[in-house]
Amino acid sequence: MHPAGMTRVERESRSKLKPLISWKEFLRATPTLRHLTCGKPNCKCRRGQKHTALVLTRIVNGKAEQLHIPKDNETVAREWIERYREILALLEKISSSSWDRLKRKKKPR
Ligand SMILES: [Zn+2]
Image (tube, helix red, strand yellow):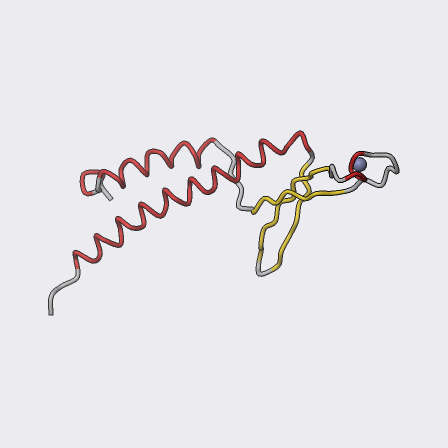
């Protein structure tokens, strides 16, 4: 597809997409914050201030997989998930442009 035949939205989406998929990491997963008690008898978690742990879930071939994320990696994991969502949104915009293009090409009966 030549850029001249594209809509402005499509051109912009493709150029935003390029660096996201070329150089950066992304991750399809659902983040869940778990509230846990650790087992130490005098810990604050026993008095209601539970610890938190980030758990990622993804579905592969219909099966759920979980990944427990250490505190140090929480920020980076959330960034990768956010980037995946951004990529999906851009793909959707490009896909809509293609949809519209095919719709216009449909011959009248
Ligand atoms: Zn505790």
